[in-house]
Length: 406
Image 1: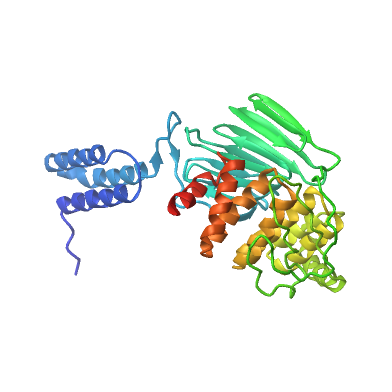
Image 2: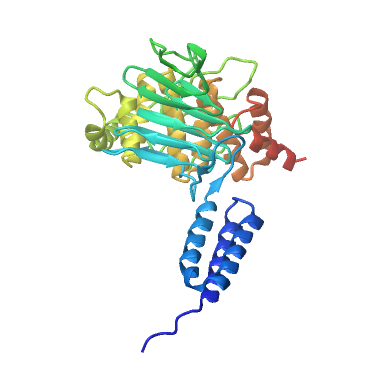
């Protein structure tokens, strides 16, 4: 026995209802315009019933398609991702890997490239290029702010298209402009590039952070209470990668570098754990920092922590040591160790008073302190952030923290 077939009017009604729900859920074209189009299709249906079924299906496809488009300023409509790419690492194996963002921007990883999406905002993101080449097409609006980080370099983008290639072994960043303008900044460069152009940047030998020698260095990995008031990490001293002692910060005084003391047995354990991933993923002759990156991207958090601690012990007072501290903070944050993450970010801010990592670390500290209910500390950090980075990626959040406490 065959089931009763719905009437053409019922089909049209279902199409209109589906279109209404899609438009209500997704910002897109004018709802009145779309509904008027559906109404016109209904009218034709009454006059030409034989063609309504095909027209109804077409109308549904058009309606749902329009719901995924968005106009941004003077830019052409771009496909909007259903969800933003999650924060975290991405690696393209043998095929290009596209990442679509809600503002219409697309980042395509070439085969072999590795990125780390560090922050996603409503009008931009911060993406670290760990290795390889990415094709970046940023959709321009007045509020657009994108940062592509590569080592110590920061490519600031407001609306453009370019390729960026990072060679961590050579410390070389190559930018090939296709459209628009970007600003490249780093330890030895601050330069704008406009299309069409192609340039390679390198700051060799590796830049070091100005330091003042502390009166005494810690002799163990145990982390005593911090003078800055940041909470001690859980299980301090139990892990070879426990954060080093944080030194009280004064903006008018030079920052002190705290050397991480890692017990020999902790390093050996880290070598054993990290080597499982890094021997396969890291190129032959890779530095300890690169091996740590490989272990982290392979999901070996324990090995990565030990290798980052080893990298800090091998190159104290350098940009590599700062990067290792930042990534130790990221690992702690990913593991839910909010206090440990805040302490590592505090170390970054003390060892590198300027640069993208220091800026990002300070912004993350505001969020972590606010999350723990440390309102006074979060407010002080927010004020400090806005003085140093009034237009930084965390500036809106910092202002909201200050506004909420007034």
